[in-house]
Length: 258
Image (cartoon, rainbow, N blue to C red; front, top):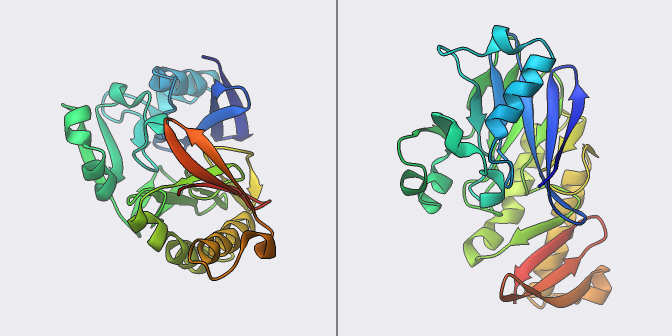
């Protein structure tokens, strides 16, 4: 399948893995003064590491940032398969412990070293720091990464303009509170959002739009309100052999179990 490389700024690239018509999964390459970091690894891009190295070579940064002593780093926003297509080529990786265990990473990626990430961790690439935030709900170990100096937030699937998959009672119950905490902790610290699906970049207020939309969905699911009153369109769809409800909230969409 095809992919497209989009340059975000002089040291940040977005790689868009085309999953099908009007469908993609997006991952990222970030270059600091000392290290290079890939965030996620696509789905069909089994050669994600090679793609990243090619970008760095074209930018004249490969010899400076990558060697046997300091290989390209990779961090995973969450453990779904469309974010880990090329993970196998990396000797070690960073992910939240909840998704490491929940997606049986030890079994699925044998021989690779796992580094746990948690709230407040800093990934230092050399004069470029990324702060880690926990944002559980879409998965129990979902993470967001704040580029402190460049003022953008990488949000995985949890904050985007496309469909956000929300299955499982535990994740659905905690998602709203998780987003609220993330809004509070990052308020005024970023200007744009880079999500894994849909459009990118998005303005910073997309996080609040997703939070507001999810609160409306939950009121409807708890029979505290109805979709028409909330301005939501709900349709039933077949998705990967499952019957799901598609909540069209205008600013974003949610797939939820019935």
